[in-house]
Amino acid sequence: MSGLFHRLAKRSGPAIPFTIDGAPAEVQAGDLLIGAILLHRHALRRFEFGPGERAGYCLMGACQDCWVGLADGRRVRACTTRVEPGMAVVTGGVGE
Ligand code: FES
Image 1 (cartoon, rainbow, N blue to C red):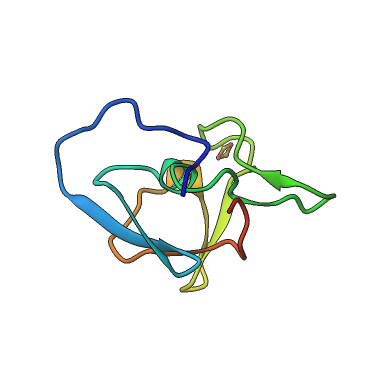
Image 2: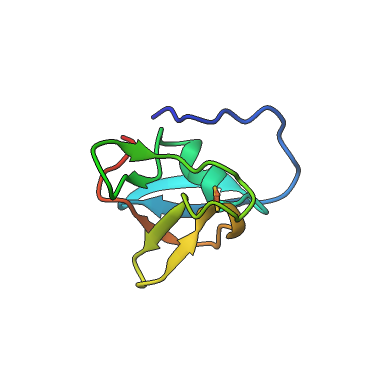
């Protein structure tokens, strides 16, 4: 699986397991959800006003382009949310 983002530097610290649409994935402790998803996928969500997919825009919590759903029912801004162990992202197959 290849994503839109590519990690340029590896930090020390434990790997954090999470899932994207049930598929197991791993990131480094401290990673934000937007990076975690885009390391594995080329998009975060479907565009609600037309065809296509979205992958965030500002990366700093301002544009609201990076909302993603979690299996526990929460909706979070991926660019301001750190990945938690066991977090289950639900995209409906976007960005595969
Ligand atoms: S990318 Fe703009 S708010 Fe997250």
